[in-house]
Picture 1 (cartoon, helix red, strand yellow):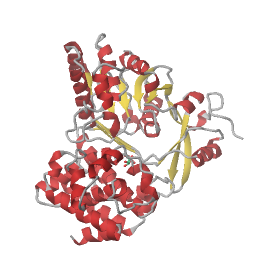
Picture 2 (cartoon, rainbow, N blue to C red; picture 1 turned 180 degrees about the horizontal axis):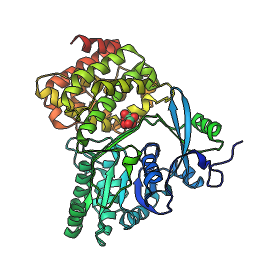
Picture 3 (cartoon, protein in one colour; picture 1 turned 90 degrees about the horizontal axis):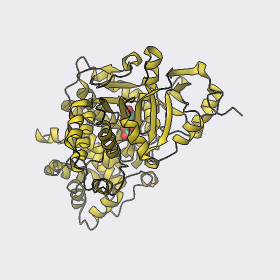
Picture 4 (cartoon, rainbow, N blue to C red; picture 1 turned 90 degrees about the vertical axis):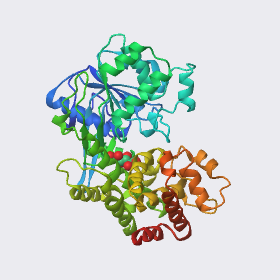
Length: 490
Ligand code: CS2
């Protein structure tokens, strides 16, 4: 039996990175695996290289799943790197405090207003930004936000907590940076917009609005690292490698990338010394990553699920899945992107192949397929519209949409199988309501594309709805392979 991980047993000779200070300079919202394998590692490594009071005060949104073990382990945990040549593990010592935001929202608000904290980082997933799918603006009518705006509850939404924290901070006027680390296009701009819209909707005083406009920055950024869910096998591997029992290790691939706009209102860790790239071309990197990696990932996941492939590497090993993805990258995605200067798209795609192929990651297709109604908004409509406006039908994007519908909102006579049933899809109920009573597959698809789940402009292009209908019909009648064969000959 290996000893439980805490400060007395920690194998500090296995540090990946550490903060020498007990002081916290960063508040993090969304204390989950991705943050712990990405920004936290860059921060720990930056401080090991260049110092600074940038310890992290982390809050999970509503679950204690990660917080309980973090607290029991003096906020230490390990990252288990899974490479084809074997696994390696190291310790991260950068969190100084952890808690659950929904259990104590005032603690979050106080942390954001505390002048010692100069950055708020966010990994709250697409859902955390509470945006309306048709406009991209703050969903002021959603039940959670509407109740906060009506003033009947203490804010518990991420955007509400930030807005309230900044309102308090306005009293001291201390500048701050809010840094989104989620898979959103123009992540910083989006965050600024929804925070500002929240302040407007709640009638915030003009000094608060002015403070946010003049003293709070929202840099854009692109984040990348494949991080699956933790299993008991990961804890067992860490016990074998480090000689301790970590109740919440984070498995991750070796690859990691962070591209940032250098627009920090009150300083920042030396993240470049840990390998982060600061550039003015962030939006181009965001597009590359959200489309070539994430968009393709969704296609691999939905086609894989419809073919009973439980993991990304098994789905990617199917020849027709590769065919669909490569066609999507070449025809539907690459023409929509002005690549960053000197960017080698061929090398990027071949690195993606190696990353998706890695059998040790065990990345569940259902994990990537979950929250599709939110994720696809970042991966499909804008690229589809770019093509459609130029008279080109984006076949792979239509296929991804059809495969998503087949998995989470199938026509009545089609059963997508057991894997599809375990996809977490927050819009499942509203999708089912939207398609109830549809008379044809076209009607079924149209009710989704024009039903408040996608930007309105997309429904204006009947060629897209028609193509999704054809591909959904093929998936239902002959399976995903036949649908891919159809796009290959189109
Ligand atoms: C994935 C991402 O679950 C998903 O939707 O596409 O989490 C992906 O693994 C990361 O963005 C990689 O950086």
